[in-house]
Image (cartoon, rainbow, N blue to C red):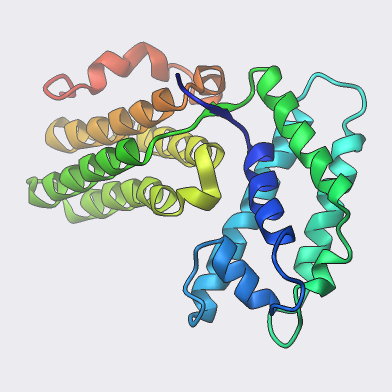
Length: 247
């Protein structure tokens, strides 16, 4: 059975792991451990904290989409936690400096929000590690195919970079989760579709394959409701995106 998740559940999971760490440990060490970053690489830690902030923004958007009257009940604790995180120094400070500003009850509200998002069918399905690995391999195979294809260099660079956006989420799935994968794959579908409209023959076929793998990614996390945000008319021409039909 597929396991449901949401941006709120993922943030709660990350923050709860951090909250449980010893307050005497340096902040940078806690984030390195919880976000699975290289503790000796300040840039890697900063990038992954950036992904966490992006996840906060995804949750804020999900809260805005909820069919409830008291959205501030969840937005206030979310904003408080984010402000605390953004204002905390990474170096020469202990985790207790942050932990002391976040009550466990505040984390519980984030968890409850995550459950509500799922209950209103605005969540996603978790992707198994084996499925992520298979999807990543398919993306790399398509990147190789695009590199070898007889198409112009600019189109090659564009399509490979679009695929890299999805691959980056896969590589950082432990932070960005299915909500991040949904957002990025949808952006890839929309951006590549605009490009597809401008192409002919072989380049169009390659662009169609990129769109197809992004659509497949969306289907794996069951976000059909959110596909309505894609460019008008895309669903009607999906059959044309299949290899051999793009001329």
